[in-house]
Length: 393
Image 1: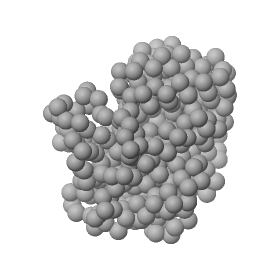
Image 2: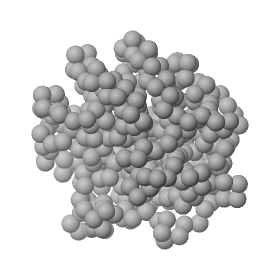
Image 3: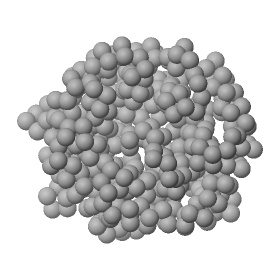
Image 4: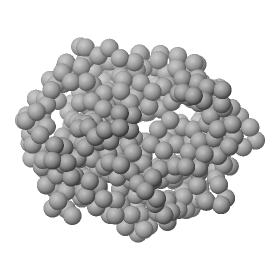
């Protein structure tokens, strides 16, 4: 399998090394920032200098600093691009000075305050995404601690408290056709699991003030575990459990289980860690119907994301069943490279358009596939630091 993976990585490398637009979109999830993440991690794996990559990276950053005009969101906006810049510095990819790294901080903080006060607590497209950038910045800019605590307090104020803990109702802007319903999301891309992970990362950085909020957020999610199936619902709609979940990163119990395991580590809660492992093992044991099989190999909804999450589970726990599951989904990922007009054989399924497309991004394109392939075969102690952008580390 390693030989086939290496061959695919070579195809990706040759494509991007010969065809990269430094004026392309800055988006972390769907634009050139995600593509550059793949290229940088691949260079580390190859252990060979790449002057073309270095030139592309400098040109891209220079162009973007002078031209970005976007909302300060994480998935496709300024917060994600700012996270990308800080990540380059943290990982030693490039030496950027504080003026560049802090270029967007004020706008991101102001936007987070505005979005949270307006009940937009979404991770990908709302106020929560700012936390991920600011948490990464915090050790290098200690005054951000008070800002992060303030934002956590705003997040708490937007929540709904009960004897079960705390949760957050979905903003009506995200509820096409369900505007009159009370909807609570539990999954990682837009829901409760992302709040658990952001608060976990704050505690991990020593911001102990948010630990009670983290405990209450975990407690609420677990209170809705379905006794019969062992599943955490994808959503609650008017307090009814929506148990139809898929296996991909965005709405899976795999990602929810990983969120709980990371929380267990910082809370030093052995029972929670056991529950997180139980949830993960349950996802392996469930039989897959054709409707649950991912259509493509991409990270968000597809097979590489599943393989990578099981690999993360294995790295965290050492449980062999997770490694076996990761291997299984990696083989299915490679088997998906069947398109003659695809990128190294891969295409992405667009469920809205109902068609296959060539996409290059981190979340729904070959950059994410490439990073997952690299993490799988790399012997580096931390080959997957990039997946902090997806709240997986």
